[in-house]
Length: 125
Image (tube, rainbow, N blue to C red):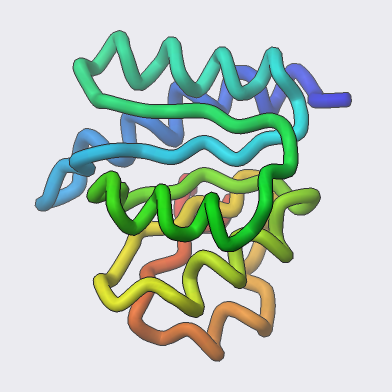
């Protein structure tokens, strides 16, 4: 279950994305909580950013191919989607911005994917 902090931080994360030098083309929202996914999506829509949500586990290969074909350049992921996220990123040739919205600090496994930019709670301060 998401906390009130996660819900309010959804707007903060999206604000951070809008302040980046390169605005995201398409944001993929990988969240187990449907209400949190909808909150992220609403925040994106408020800032005229295109996004899509998935709260269910689809076949990994299909999801990775769909994300690659869509031009998605930003993902927001919770811990329950890390296996899928790592698989997607291992197949991506273009750099992506990844928000790990439940992490205070960058997990060690992120260093194995240096082409991508990872953001965690520490980046909100």
